[in-house]
Image 1: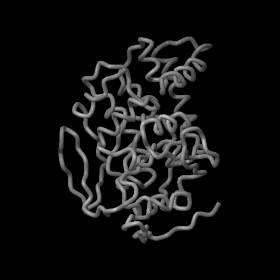
Image 2 (image 1 turned 180 degrees about the horizontal axis):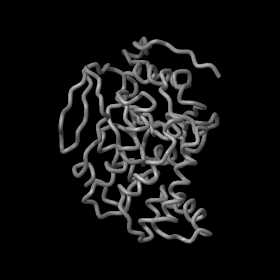
Image 3 (image 1 turned 120 degrees about the horizontal axis):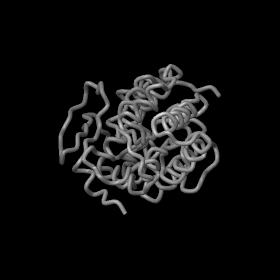
Length: 283
């Protein structure tokens, strides 16, 4: 089992560019994090942990398929894997190791991580991602800390958040570089391993019992539940193993989870009135 206790002190909690003007930065234990000056006390949940790809935007945009094609092309062009085997190998490694990249490293393939990410993500059709004002307003109305937790690299995360118009909606990003620092000699750490979730808990300094985790992956949600999070499967209406809630779309979060906007006062709960402009989502 990986010794993930070393990760929290060895890596940097990647901050989102363009922070809101009402925030300040602090460094503690070699981890950068942002303390909001408008924290609301007494909230039921203290943190919201979001996957990014196919969670903050729909799977139907085709970014996932384009990414898989680029991975296959990299395997063919740079690792010279036999064409008749590459598609099955790509899927099998993803299923066994969490990501195809992690699987290739585990098999002993040697390649530069940054080169791989630049190849796979650099050619994605980012133009399909548009500013999402509905989601932006929802996120800004939530009083909790909000953090991205993705297997992707930091550059891709910043590009996606910028395209969606959400770059200033999150406190920080836990990404490939966060979990896999440059001086790391261990195997690649990524979701859905429970160790990755345990590392994220330490890095972001969150209490999983007071944190909601959102992801489109069934196995990631299952691992999140094992790690102690409240869990939400995104992109489907039916509950899956380990999921406490299901959302067809991230836009439905207010209807499905009104408790995000509630505070505890004695034995009663009072709704926090949204500071953002309400927006109606039409099916």
